[in-house]
Length: 349
Image (cartoon, rainbow, N blue to C red; front, side, top):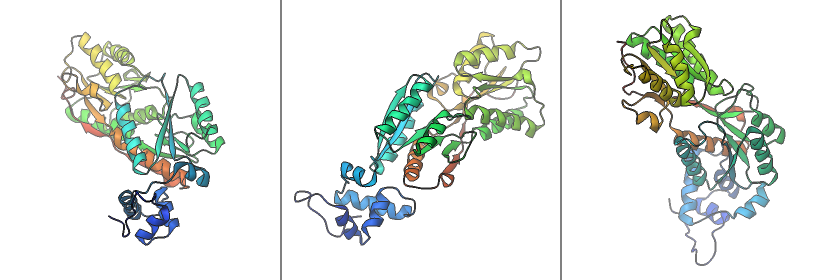
């Protein structure tokens, strides 16, 4: 919408008072809306945002920092030693964060670290130097030292995933366990009865959730758990190949494998093909992530896809609300991964 009383940019910079007057709202309401406070309705925030853009209003960042104690920056620290720190979906994740932040006139402060300890030091430095008002924590761990540090510092944060101790935690999480449960039902429906699982490192919460989902799926369809068909701790394609290779050498090998990540699934497929097996016929394989690498396989990998751009955007919005004072227990949301059928699964031969 256009403000009632346009201000010429050639004469002076529009103020928040000009914006409030053009909308017939109080200065306090406009200020809280622009800062993402949840006590202002989404419709009102949208109306004020559109009016600010039409008027050409933008807050002076240094003045706002002095007044509010905030620099209007979201923080993200990437630990580069983790196996998928530079995967293609990182670009989609960052796109979502920056788009959502920019829409509310926030910025993203990003740093990298080569180890967990260096990462913790980086959080301390960014807090001390006031480079960020709060942090998005990707790849949450069951026992997450970042959570303990930020709690001690009194610094807002939001998890991409969950953690063992949920006190004071806000999060956005994908229901990976439900996807694994669905994958078992899908394969059972095709006629598979020997369904293996190639899991990830239990230090990460997602790995536990996906393994638990697989086990729940077995129980749902009346299949017994077979320890020989369950691998834990895989992170790389090489890990996936090694785990699949061991299972395929069993006297009663699996006819299908569910993998906690696409990377593990790609490795499992390599191991099966090295043994002359036809993927989708002799061995069915289902992954999770919906990565481009999986889709480039021949045939494309059946996988549960995650909208990384939407996840990044929602995490940014939740963190801005948390920084604005929202109770973390009101900022807990989940979404589903979406099945993307390919040619790597089907009825057993």
